[in-house]
Image: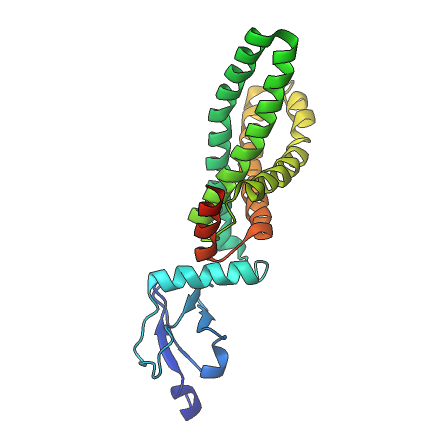
Length: 232
């Protein structure tokens, strides 16, 4: 290591523990840099004179990762790191929609009971609005807690968020309506593994769609909180 290298900044990644010496010109504006071992984005606290033994804190690491995802989402994507998160995103999202499904059935049944055919269509309208809102709010919650990305939370933004994601999900899930009936004629030892593989694949796809749609509505952390209060 030459003298120019030794003049760099010593940092230690809180995620994987790897240690590096970074030259000042290799650190992005705002103190952001990327770990060469695990690809996690970190930040160095801005100080007049940085200590060579400074460690980036976990909180600063999360905020740096969120900053990069908001400004450069495609550059921050690493399949080995993000694939499990997409899986959990899709899993949690699917379970929420499945739980809400029974509520929507009850709403439609009750509306039909009270209003007959007119009540049925009123119930469908209420359910459609409710589905879009739940999809939007659930995705906002998941991207914040799984991806450290913040989105606007006023009702119009959430409605747009949910509408775009609902349309993309219906498009992505449409092929399954043809594949699963074809698989039903196959033996159980073929049908079950293929069906499970498709479910896992769709969970990952849901996570990828949710992550991508969220980038259309991203804001800074403080602005997310203000948008919530405005909607109230």
